[in-house]
Image (cartoon, rainbow, N blue to C red; front, side, top):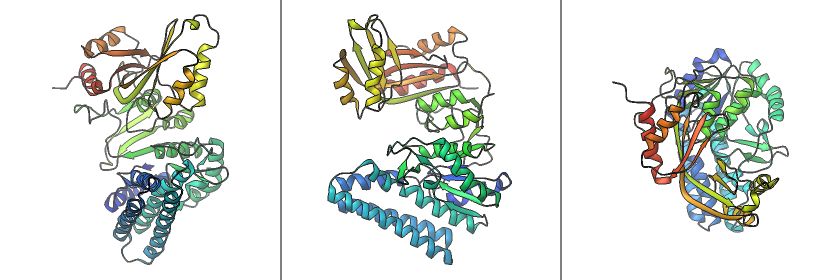
Length: 448
């Protein structure tokens, strides 16, 4: 059971999750928690302010976060003896963050390892609050240090989990606790390298943590508790008529996560798919709701949902040498691999290759290397709109209807995936919302 930032955003929300967990006590739950809402962003700002010489601002943020956590703890624990022990742990963690911020201010530079050390504090603090609340509610909650379970590579900020090591840790650390009737509470998002150095899985990594732990323990279900009723046919912030999807296939959910759906981290589904563990997306504010069930046997539909994402760049390479040139594409992808930049969509012709990327922090360096291979140009300020459905290509009228719905919106690039499960269209960034609304209206007309 994974609870997101809004689900543990304050004392009242945390107490609500205690009731949800209590209702599943007979199913031997393991609880994975995010940092309280807004805390991770605040911790990133602490690191950035310290590096930029704004020490006063950095330390002020630390103290504001300290006060927030102390206030929520007081509500959860009252004047119990346990509060003093937990308060001491919380203060020690904030003292650690303050010391790291001071060190960054002196150095004027932050390594990825240092960033991980600071931002990981959010989840570690959340675990302490949640365990306090659960114990006060009579639940046998036990805090487990995620760094002893979620073993990763040493690629800080975006570490790759090591499933075999995680499974072994699950057997030796978590399984005995469960067998003894305890409810382990563990931080999402964070882990540790083989050498024991704190690492993080990247933004949204708490979902991934839950799936990895669920797979390691061969769980009968993985529940992602959030602030929406489940996976929707579109982002409700863009499409007001979006509706809940009660059942969805693993491959469809994975595509939606990769192309902009905010409910799930893109990697979440992978460990569950491997073992066929159903994933549920549920609303912690409405625990009796049906939510969304993600499985292999969900209905096959032409269109299941619409997704969109801004901040896309298209890289175009043109070279007459490409024609019949053995290994040319491999050479191109080697450049992206060296710079750890992933490619989302690709289209090719005899003399041109077009690729999209959505993280352009390393794009300038990529372009320099690509310039030695071909004439290179880049278009920024674009976005992706994707139609996802397992039966998308069963009837070509679906594809025709999608293009018709866009009307005069200019499509820069079009791609039907190899699995034919998604149709991806690259449009101007400012046209993404309009494109999503038009497509949703075409495939999910309002019900009278």
